[in-house]
Amino acid sequence: MLPPRAAVGVADAVRALALLPDVPRHEVLACLGLDSTGPTSRPPRPPAPPQGTAGSGRTRAPREGAPPPPPPPPSLPGVPLGIVAVDHHPVLPDMVRSRQLRAVLSRPVPTDDLDVGAAVELVARGLPVAPAPRRHRSSLALGARLMVDIGAGMDPFRRDAEDVVRCARDLAGRSGVQVLQFRQVPTSAAGVGSGPTWTWAAHRRPASGTPVLVITDLGLAGPCVDEDPAGERDWCAFLAGLGRGGCRAVVLTPYLRARVPPALRRLATVLALDHRGRPRTARHAHGGAP
Image: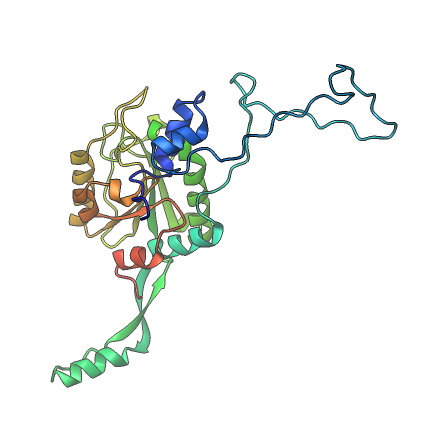
């Protein structure tokens, strides 16, 4: 019998590993239910002894013409030695990220082509075919809004959010996507904006039908050192306000969809920030063509 699927995701693992640097990684993952096998059967390889005769403590002089040893990995600025800088590996591959964003940010627009199937259905029901039904296509030319949570709970995923913003601008152009930042929730007293926090203003709903993509942890990261997360009621009020204005939001979060409260899932389309997101789900959130 297979073990039940873990109720936690990559966001929980990242935060737990950051808070418990002295605990072996496999033990942290096992406690979270992400690694049911525990430590591997093969022990970790011990560090290589210095060059020279084993046990003699003497080092062998490098051969003439041998390349110099590689430099030690760089340390992150402002942190103790031993914590090294690592390359950024995006959670979403480029192809998946582009496909998801195109589905989220596009809007259906009518074309000049007749929708034959819809016309036949109208005739079969004895209804007038004027005006003639037209086929629709998805377009990125009508603009979209991208809202990015820069609160403490999203710190481990800031580079991933930047990847999404860059990809959205590549798809729709800088003028085709309005990027706004916020903390906790867009309707907080701090407001939203695209520059320094002292230039932010109160949130205003976009025009009806504008696609809205929100990158946030929805307060699921829990209390942080410098700020408290927004509650479910605050997020429900924000998403319900978008709905009353004719905009249904798509929320991209680092947590599993099952972790999001049902009330929020009813008010927005929730996608996990991983490769399992389904563009078809996002497209239908805005009424796009299948």
